[in-house]
Length: 222
Image (cartoon, rainbow, N blue to C red):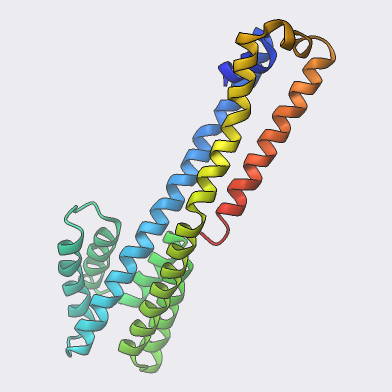
């Protein structure tokens, strides 16, 4: 941010002020990591539902189906720190201690913040109360999640090139300003004095808003 401020203002004090904006980066980065982790957990959850549905279709009890699902996921995700494996281990431990599975699932839905997990947990709890068809609920839920993820994947492929173009277009203005500042300093000098600061500030704001809009549009539904 200091380099960016120097490029547009060539004033150390202003550069230091702009550099303070960098304190927001950890929050932005944390939000990105949380979104990625949720997407990965939802993918793992879909695989877990497929395994659960198969185990229940084979006539296993709900408790044994959850234990078998934990073993099945280890084949897909060897890392023991995988979120869904850890959650299944937690559910199985709580079940062994006499806690109903539906309560553990509802807790998982609440902690994950993923709508698909919440809806499945609520449907599972309702089926347990009313004696509904758990196999059918899991099959439909896993199919629904799979279809949603396929659509999102198709959208991601379609906008991948546009996302790259947006990043390139956002980077080009800074390259132009840097090139002109070093190759023709006299030509750029008026922009670093008086009203030129206002022009540079307006340009930075326009670039920032355009990048924010591009990111927002690209992330719709993702």
